[in-house]
Image (cartoon, rainbow, N blue to C red; front, side, top):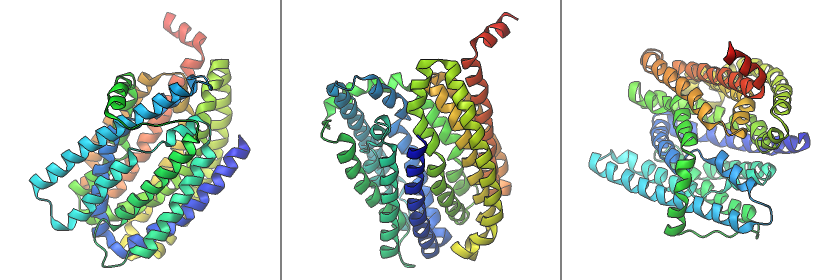
Length: 416
């Protein structure tokens, strides 16, 4: 597993390096205003993405791994049904998106960005990356991510100029999503699986949405406390400040997949550990969380020392105010690195409703703080609230996972 993690890390770092240069080039060419327009469209696309993917990846992985290895027909049906209803939902939401834009008569400089946002949504509906994770082929996932980073950088340097319209960066991301999607299909299916896109398969898979309702609601809540701040900045402050904040998000979101490697790698293994015993699962979680906390603390200190002086040199003086929010966003991802050990542990025990409760409380607190603080403190408040929200998630997941893995303590407390 360590060898696998190191291999994944190398690929991810390579992709990060390429993606970082591409993002910096795009930011310098488009400037905060155009980057802010792309950011708002991307935020609306993220909202639609929630209803396409429904946050059901943990459920899909559980069902895939529960199917006997020789029963390819069950796995084929799962893949086909999932991809079919995702595409159906994406088409419906895209139609609504177009209708709203026509009715509202959006400004002309938003047209291209909006079109690219819709195409990106349709492309993302077809991805089967969750199959690679269920197959414990996370190394290939990171190779594809690195490939996407290199392709994105190449297209950004080749296509983006100072006179490029708002949404040019979204056009590049749409192309990358389509290419990576096709490659992922070929690798994840690997000649063993068949996939059929049809209305019948989509309707047959819809009952799974009800089965995964707690995961879907958890995904909505995650959006509220992690991503809703992006459109809120545009609504409550300005698209220019949102453009600055989006540069910080691009840096932090580039680091996030690297930090998320451990939970993604461990989740299928946690399912196996939980079948041995809950106490065995807890022992492994504590060992891993302790090592990650130490590593995260070192990375956090380095982040706050390096980024503030380097940030304006990379992005330009117009983005200098985003340096500290960028540090805070990276810190929030470091916290996610640790809390992922316990949140995925709860999901491995099928405690989806407990995760929903934890996220509901966090989302309510985060939304209230953002509404109060963003109008006054802007993107610094948004980034600070993100860190606080992730710490709340960590505390809640640790507490409930401890209780799940120590039933004797839970029973004693209940008796008292």
